[in-house]
Length: 309
Image (cartoon, rainbow, N blue to C red; front, side):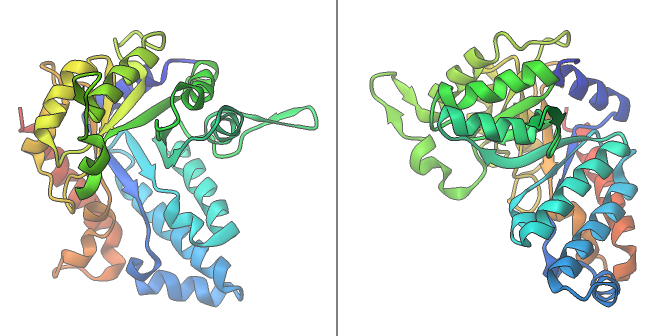
């Protein structure tokens, strides 16, 4: 199976885009006409809610699949809908892949080694069921938390090797309180926690480098901390950065620039609410035009990022 970083870079080149669309659907933000139709067709409220999400997601995917290389569904917005939400999460991944999109499962998983192995099999690999190898989520990559150290990361890397998948390790996240822990100075190492984590990520990915020169072990680095991103780009030259924080969280194109190398490569920039709920800010459109609004938002974002260099 081809290295994930190679597959992602190929998709970036084909679409001429570094935009990652976050599919973080909230039921209260989904157009009423979708929810009304799904409620009429489903007696069970959980199923109606989940089907509303799936219908909404398909509309977004249909509108943007030719413009971007990758999507990132955040699993929390599906877990909140129970078992039906998990079903729709899987269906969303399948539908996106059928349209040629790569999929990053934003699940931020990890645990002790045996539990991490189960997570890795579920999101990236296959599970043995009565002698048959079956996929569960079958994402192309998954976000992981590194707090448990390498024995919690190793099972994910093993699945990456086996199935050509990738991981994005939380290094410097975009949220306001990330510095509570990530910016703490490690006296013995003479560096901050996020810098120490960058050294770990670089070493974990040394054996996972593809033909493009990038590793399947990537890093999550927020656009809201451009100075830190500049340091991290130097510390992790072979890692692809997944950059959240553009748009609703306050990051702009200029803030994303430090995540890229001198060849304008090495990162993808995520935008969730600013794209999928763009129709909420368009007075010239009705809610049935939500997919058009999302497409327009992607086009604007592509242009915004293309001129930052």
